[in-house]
Structure formats: structure tokens, C-alpha cells
Image (cartoon, rainbow, N blue to C red; front, side, top):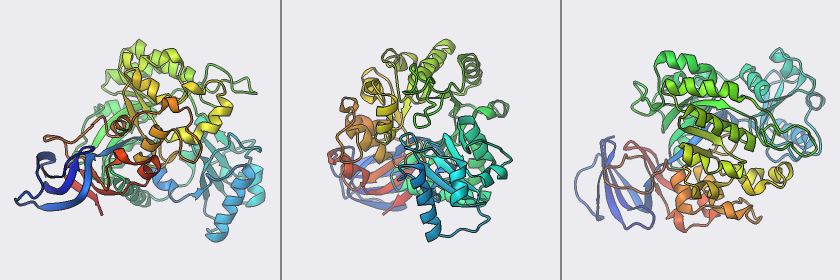
Length: 482
């Protein structure tokens, strides 16, 4: 559809009622309501607010699509409770004895007990069980699941690289089934106003999305470390539009890991974790990181570096400075004060996930005690001149930018007081960080748009999380409408 008329919408926050015409993927006119003229498709906005479409800058798409069908364990407050949730679900929804039992979403950083393969064996003797932590950096396997992938392990709790290797070896749904789940997940994202997603799946995302065809959102296909040589051979560069995709598929940045995660206590910090001698896990030391950044950037690939702990962020920023290239740091959860202004100075985007802050506040209070004033420091980054881009890291948090926006503005997601409210940012900045930097709608803009039922700038955080989206448009095509 290349001829669209949006009737009775209010372009921009606090905008006046107007009719907006879209042709060939661009906004071509904004006129007083009641305009005449033919349009191949008319969408009535019912007085809603017309805004740039939302961008989720960090998603693991297949894992998100799959997690929507896994047994939820996010309510577990102990290993024992996780087992109880698992058994309750299987009692209500029995699965074949030969089928892998998969749960997801547990957070064990504050548990009074420890996960162990023997707990799963006692609860489900002989069953293959794989339980994934909320941050995807831990997988808890039963003895039968370990045998399934040809592994032996003393506890069955695998972290970081071992976790990711095991995840890749576990049985999965057939490709056509996965592709159907992905299409459903992207359509659900469109219903929340999402017009673009960066897919950080640890897979050949270029090949996978080329197979799937044009989705209901633009997709940036992030390049995993193991695919660097193949990507260079293909001649792909960050930002390239992939052929036969209707312009919706592009080559994304090149992803590297410097450390682990807070909940797994593997985020690499300057100080050790309480009660332990370890400061976390350094997954990629500078001697390996710098050559990889240089090789990627020399071939047109923008680096995206996973760094959560303050020492990991220092290492990542040092590497960007040594190579002399721009890029992204994904997560940037704990920063040394002297590193905050370096993002803007080096042209490094702070790609952050605001919904993680309320999820992780209790874990941070315990394991980053005395340092939380510089944890999730969004206002400090913004005031230093850094560019913020928001994502969800789904399935770590739901693929819903409104949840992230509300968390960035309020620094809480429940009835507790805001956590370090001095790091909250204004709504307009949070919206821009969720919209690829766009701040309004004007003639000539790319027609990646959404219509919200109300002006979000006047809503409470709770209402933001439940804001209905009337319509979503990608390149002038309606991908969602109610």
C-alpha cells in the first residue's frame, strides 16, 4: 500500500487535529481535518496522537518468540519454588514424557538455596528439563537433559559460554514452527507501536530473516562473533539493505561480549562481589577485543559490545578509543564516574534497557552495594551528551517499549518508591530514545509511524504501560490497526 490517509490524528505531542497523507513510504502532507481526495486506504485515528514508530534496539527474537511458550518461573523466590511452579504447570498442562520440559525467567541471585540437577531429578525422575534464567546467562539442566547434549556437569547449572553452547545443542522446534512463532511475536510487537527491531539472536540472522521474508517491522540483523569472516566474505556492511526484502531487512552491528551479567554475578567489576573474591568474568580481554573491533570496523561493521560491570565498560571504552571507531555499548549498567562522559566524547551509543532497572534493583542493592548511585545512570549519560537508545533485551524483559519508557521516567514498576530517582529522565527524552532519535512527525519523514489512543506525555507510568496503540505503519504499510 503506497497511498494512505490518516484521518483525525494529532501529529506530535500536544498536536492539533489534522489529516496526514502518506505516499511511497513518506509523509507527504499534514492538513486540517476533513481534507478531500482519493486514498487507497483510510485509517481513522479517532483523535489519537501520531508519533514516530518505536524501535526496540536489542531483542533476541527467536528466544523471545520461544519464551512466550515456555513455563514461566519469574515468580520463584527459591530453587524449591521454581520446582513447585514447574510441577504445577505440568500438572495443569501435561507434556509427553519424551518431550524436553523448558522453563524460563528465574532469577537466582537472591535465592536462599542453589539450583542443582539433583533437585530436578528428584522432582521429575528421568525427565529432560532445561530451565533458563531471566538474563539468559544461566541454564539449569537435569541429568537427562545433560545426557541429551552429551555433557557431564557437577551441578547442571551452566553459565556464560557453557550456557550458550548448551542452549544451541538442546532440541528446538522445527524451523517452520519457529518461523511461525517469530511472525506472531513481531506482529504482537507491532500492536505496541514497534516499527523496527534489532535482532541480537546468536545465529545467522541474515540467513534466517532472508528465509522468513518481509516481516511486520524493519529488522536489523545483528552479526554474531562467529560469523565475522562469513559476513566479510559476503561483503555485508552495517546498514546495507538486504536484497528482496522490500527494504525491511538491513545488516546490523557486530556483537561481542566483554563480560557476563549482574544476576549471574559474572558482570566484570572493579570491586569483587560481596562474600566472594571474584569481581566477575572477563569474557573477552583487551588483547582479543581490540583486534576484533579493528577488523570489523575496517570492513564496515559497527561494533556493539556487551558490557555490564564498570570494569567491563572501562575496557570497552578503552578499546573504542584505541581503535578510533564509533559503536555501541549494550547494557552499560554500572559505570565508573570518569567513564560516563567518554560515551559522547568517543561517539559510542549507550544502548540500554530501562526495564532491567526495576527488575534488578534488589540484586544491585545486594551485589553492587555502595555503588548503585552509578547503576543504570541514564540521566548522567544524557546530561553528558551521550546518545541513548532503548531496547528490551527480550526475553529478559517483555518486547514492549512502553514498559521501558515508563521505567526510565519513574525508576520503578510497582508500588515501591523510585530507585535512585535522580537518574530518571524526562518523558520526551525517553520517547526519543525509543524512537531511533526521532522527536516528531513532519512532511518528508519516513512513514514509520504509530497512532496512540491518548497523548502519552500526560499519562502516568502505569497508564503508559497499558496505552492502547490504534495503528502502526511501516514504510506506509499498516501493520496493526484496531
